[in-house]
Image (cartoon, rainbow, N blue to C red):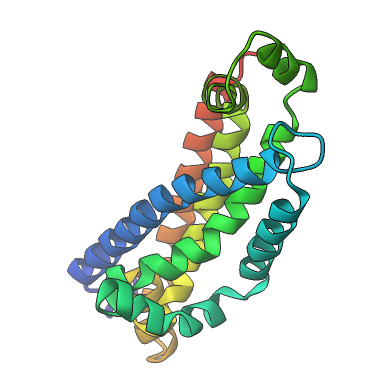
Length: 222
């Protein structure tokens, strides 16, 4: 009975799909963290009352971030195909999935970074200014270290969102577990393939959540 249910499972394909998902996740997460932190810091610094206050720049940057956040990821995948082709030379596979994954996740993480920075007491920044710290020093030695637990928690949430994004990227042939679930589990009605891919995605999310929570607790010295 068990063998009959799993008769459509070809484990080498499952393993390759898992590796593709991990490749998409790791590549896009690294770029997302870099861009998200940069955008989040700029949003925070240019806001009213901050050390680089510029309401015009803040509003323009906020509109840009909100526009990207408001576009459903499946639509973003399709809209970005010409740009992805120009950047990566292909819109398929792992390489073709990374630009839309970053475009979809970086604005989301930027808002989480901004929120984490707002938790830092204003007095801490003022004390650093009084000691003559430059803006770069305030960002690198005060803001980011103080907000590190929040940044890690935000990165955990973002990584989990990226897992779901990689699954949706299978719609346009990006590969990975999502592609396998769509092509075999859904289009060919192979319930066993669908079950295995879902279980692997759930386990991946649980692993990311556990690691993120553990690291955030280790970094939080409050």
